[in-house]
Image (cartoon, rainbow, N blue to C red; front, side, top):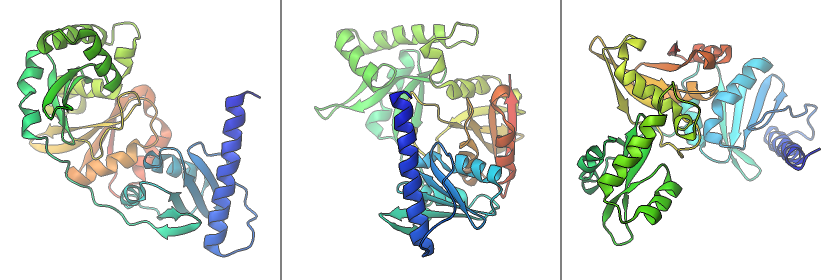
Length: 326
């Protein structure tokens, strides 16, 4: 057995022990007959028709996988346990028809999670917005999410407005924090607009479905899909599509993460969620978008729309529309 495999098995056993202990003490019983089952984001077990799921890895993205496990296991009630982000989980759980209890693990106690409200994203500061014209001058498309001003090329972030150590604001060029830092070291003497224009040219050459696979066209694929919808809104029966702020900030650039848009359908704004790859949590994410705009649809490539995603969407109190495109 390889070391990574052995470590994964050990982690699974430890999480199973942790879940069993939490459930046993919460229910006030001496022992459980149930054995934890395999569940990649943590651990899971069934006790008297209730499915108990412990979310360990990225818990804020774990409700969808937990619901998929519950559907496959045929449980009547789902209890979700996490140590972080339980307010978000509780909010999204309320959007589903079935009974879902969310618990906050405080050492060995389980406390009912309190659903946190869907907050309005903070506005970008005026001094940050002042660099939007610079972004356009370099050939990138300005975008603002949760107070952060960036420039994108076909959905890929290529620059960001940041605060400097001197107390000023600056436009850093590069794809992600490490790339921006390296770019500044290597090309610090190049004027910002010229540097950005060069990056825009390179990225544009790769952000095309007809080009060979490359990191620059694999990153942020869901945002490339949104960019495509902006130019072809008829793909989703819309008059127009424009970017919208996500319900929660994107954690990083390297990992797939849904993005949001607003579609104009005959004068009515509809929330849009763009997804790429198999994402079991896209439906709970869409529940937040639905709560903000009143209705929502999920758009993804044909190959990524699985039966389990359809089942999860049907489980919402107000089901979302699913659209797959080539």
